[in-house]
Amino acid sequence: MKIAIVHDWLTGMRGGEKCLEVFCELYPQADIFTLIHNKGSLSPLIEKMNIKTSFLQNIPGIKNNYRNYLALYPAAIESFNLKGYDLILSSSHCVAKGIRISDAAMHICYCYTPMRYAWLFFEEYFGNYSPIKKAAIKTLIKYLRKWDLKTNAGVDFFVAISDNIRLRIDDFYGRQAKVIYPPVDTSRFNLSTKDEGYYLIVSALVPYKRVDIAIEAFNRLGKKLIVIGTGNCQNKLKKLAGKNIEFIGWADDNALQKYYRNSRALIFPGEEDFGIVPLEAQACGKPVIAFAKGGATETLTRQTAVFFENQSAQGLIAAINEFEIRKDDFKPETMRENSLRFDRKIFKEKIKNYIEE
Image (cartoon, rainbow, N blue to C red; front, side, top):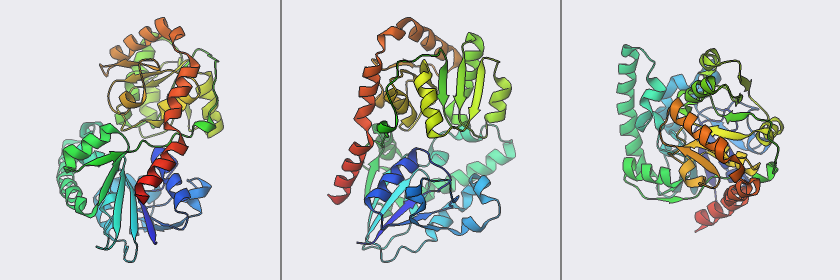
């Protein structure tokens, strides 16, 4: 059987790439089709696959500015010729599911979310743009929505990463989806009872992650906060932060585990489609203080997290104060046990069985 795996872009190892890694383990002879590939930015397992890129790869400077070419994404993904493939597995949060296929092929889409730019978080992504640029983007969004809906016909089966995303697929596409939670490599993390007194954020520093409300909250509380991650909001957030807030930038797996293990709790202020980071923290035995919306409400429990309903600095402050009162109630073993429900082996078995079925 000839298999194609379609992934939006390959520019680093985040949650979607952890899923892609499992797909590569299951189908090592598959070809990967992607808009652009930043060589050397992925795990060795992905890098050794046969990776085919679109015409976007040839644009000078594209690797650092690929998001500026959103208008070209549909044409780029449709430019691939998948004639002769029997199974197409798209790993999609943007346009990968829009790949053109032959009538003889089966197309299963593992969907991280319907395209955020088109359906959700417009203000979070584009709210700071000038009125003229914003109006132009709104016109583009209308086109993307029409294209996104039209390409649904090419998907035989949707698999959603969470019930939260299953509902979005139903709302925006009018399609049913099976839920299979993404993998958390719990074996990489070890249980810890250490507490060096700091709170931790591990996140891309982009608007919709709402790291800004955490910065405001910790400025007011004066407690120590360590922020791991990079993104286009990095300089702005650093300017807002007080001396009690430290920005680490990117951290490798070993350093990341150390920060998890020595933290008091993880702060998770944004609405995520699923959210692997809280479960990595829990694999180290750490509780989470999370915004009560999105994937976190499916993966965390009242025994492993404190939730806040009001997505603001004041709402987060109230949750931190509640946590400080209750922190002895959170047992590291309970956190670890919760994370094991989403172990990588479970995902691999479930997705393999579903595809074969």
